[in-house]
Amino acid sequence: MSPSTPRPAEQPNDLESFWMPFTANRAFKKAPRMISRAEGMHYYTTEGKPIMDGTAGLWCCNAGHARRPIIQAIQAQAEELDYAPAFQFGHPKVFAAAARVAALAPGDLDHVFFAGSGSEAVDTALKIAIAYWNVTGKGSKTRLIGRERGYHGVGFGGISVGGIVSNRKFFGSLLAGVDHMPTTYNREKQAFSKGEPEWGGHLADELERIVTLHDASTVAAVIVEPMAGSTGVLPPPVGYLKKLREICTKHGILLIFDEVISGFGRLGYAFAAERYGVIPDMICFAKGVTSGAVPMGGVLVRKGIYDAFMNGPDHAIELFHGYTYSGHPLAAAAALAALDIYREEGLFERTRDLEPLWAEAIMSLKGEPNVVDIRTLGLVAGIDLIPHADGPTKRGFAAMDHAFHNEGLMLRYTGDTLALTPPLIITESQIDELVEKVRRTIRAVA
Picture (cartoon, rainbow, N blue to C red):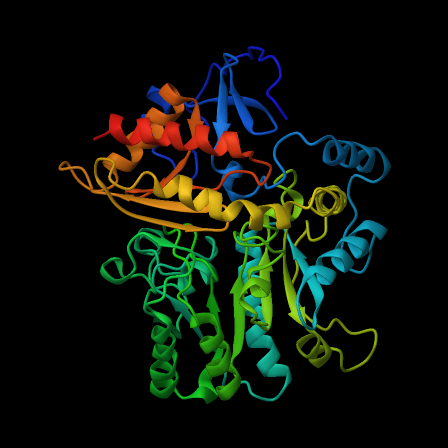
């Protein structure tokens, strides 16, 4: 999938109207990082300059960009059926997409509730958890437990259970009845880990302390990312997720895995739940389900949870929840095409094969200026830099900006951590190329 001949695109003449999300708007509009098209492993600027995609868009374009089967599926679907409501009506492809996603999930995670994004998927899962205890006669179980440094989207439910300070502090008291387990990261004990760190599994026992504090009769669900992504790539310690499962089972608490980032091959499996041999009660997904081509999210739910709602008169609505764009026809078509690519090209298995090479290449950055930790897992890496003397986030921002303008590389930063999450189609030579671009970037912002 080599880049084709770049072509220039027209520049917008008004940058002020768009209030950009999670962006330093004033800095961007002084020196825009504008992209106009994409193909394979590359974006292109409006001037036609290729930009290697080191982030799979936003952790989502797992099959790479502008894949013809996905494009053709979307085009054909738009001509046949542009939109259909999911409230009281259905269309064939959404049922096919649900069946395909459920078939990839472990255990009896057999039912899919579709949403439009990862944030919607998380809020859906939290609502299902509380509603489940209501319909099973345990309405006192309403408390939700997240984790420090967790990211679960930007809905009020997601930021309430999330644990990233900047995402929370501007928005008031958020949801009541929420508690947080400690983060699993400890640089002193885990620095420069490849894969799951050996230290930290015992931190799952903190859930026991929280349950004891509130009593299990009040706790509805625990939600964690198997790998904490947006906070800076924090792999789970060995045994941590299995211990969480054991504690939740012991106390009758639902366990929710937020796999919006880790799903669809990022860690070498359809879902991280499979990698770690843990069956949660729900899995939130989005991003890679359509390879980013059309917004889509959803929640996989275990059979027993779904069945608990299937009572009362047949004509009665069982769950008063949903979105206008739940199971949108174009999204369903894109999902089916993306899932075909993952299967036919063996991209999940390919990620497992590339993981050791990826880890070695990224770890070669150890010893570069200001690098204090590196973490790798699947085709993901987090590189911690010492904050600039002028304050935190400045070095991270400078690295992202330099990489784009000077190295032709898109990378993400969170605080002073650089995050790398390339499309799963990346080749061995492109891994080397990406790492050298990162190396020069780190030196440039030293």
